[in-house]
Structures are given as structure tokens and as C-alpha cells.
Length: 233
Image (cartoon, rainbow, N blue to C red; front, top):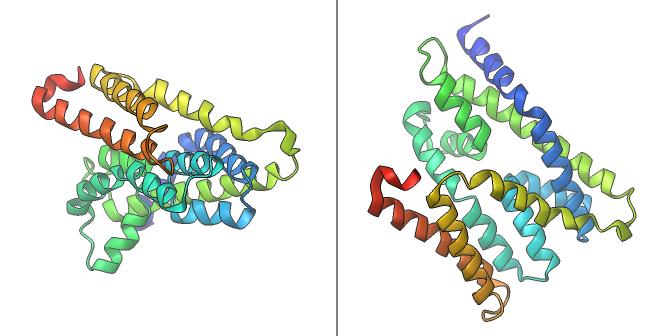
């Protein structure tokens, strides 16, 4: 087996422990999208274009509340903005040969594939970083697309009276609980929560939520720059 093929296979293999969590999350997202009135085509399209669990859940919740499309799209973009940082970090490692190959590599950037690449492939000189990343990221993409599609199809068999859309806020609560692992994270969450409580009734078209998200991110960035390494302790 060539070095590239071995690295690609290793990337796939290293992502396999994440499959149960990814499938579970994908089923929930696919079901939630369908339960708020969107069809299978919209669910598959969202998974393909947005390709971000938290952004898809946020967009689903906003759609359910009747937010304008522009607010839904901007919120998803803000939540997915972390992928800009991931891409900038990977660019010197993957060294795309052209702008279109860079776009292709950037499309598949997601938390798990990024973390696996920088922690397992980059430190190992025997691994072809590009092949490893492609193995990890395309496998992760396929699992996500299949699981969200399965969730959307399964939700069609469940009566709407069951109101599966309640899983959206529950999943976000679970994600939030896992993310509050430092004082800075707690501060940012509190700023976003208080801002949302105040601004959502005041600003039109559900834009208060978008402002609250940006406010929490800004607070975290400013505090981290001000406090230096101690900001995450």
C-alpha cells in the first residue's frame, strides 16, 4: 500500500470512534429539520451546504420561530465562523496547489477531522497530511450526510403531534454544558444569554439572537486578549 493510501485509510480509521456520536447527532438534526416543516430535499441540502451541526440546529430553531431567511443564514455563518480559523491553521500544512483545491479542502473542514489532522497526522512525519485529512474529512462528511438523511426519513414516520422539534433546545443545552469548561467560556455564555434576553424582544426579525451571539464571541475575544494565557483557566 502506498504512503498516500495508507494515510487515507488511517484518517478513516481514526474517525471511526466518533461515528456513534456523529450518527446520533445526525439523526436528531435530520429529524428536527423535518419536524419544523422542511422536507427531505431541504434537509439534505442543508446538510450539504451548511455542514455544521450547531449551525443547522440554530437555523432550524430560527426557521421554526418564523425568522427571515437573511437572519437564518447570517446566524449559521456566525456559528460556522470557527471554520475560518481551522482553515487558516490547516493551510500551511495541506499547502493547496490552487485556489480551487483550497476551496475543496476547506469545504470538508469540521471539528473532528481538523482535530485528528493536527494532533495525529501533523506530528507524524510518516503520514501524508493531505491524504490523511481527505480520509478523515470525507468519511466524516459521508457519515453526517447519511445520518441526517436517515433522521429526516425517519421523522416522516413519526406523528407531528410528538413535536420532535423540542430536541433542538435540548441538544443545545447539552452542547453548552460540555463547552462550559473554563471561566472565560462561562462569562461568554452569560453575556450571550443576557444579551439575548434583552435584545430579542427589542430587535426585529429575530436579529437579537444574532447580535447576542456576536456579543458573546466579542466578549470572549476581548477578555482573552486582555488576560492572556490565564483567560482559559
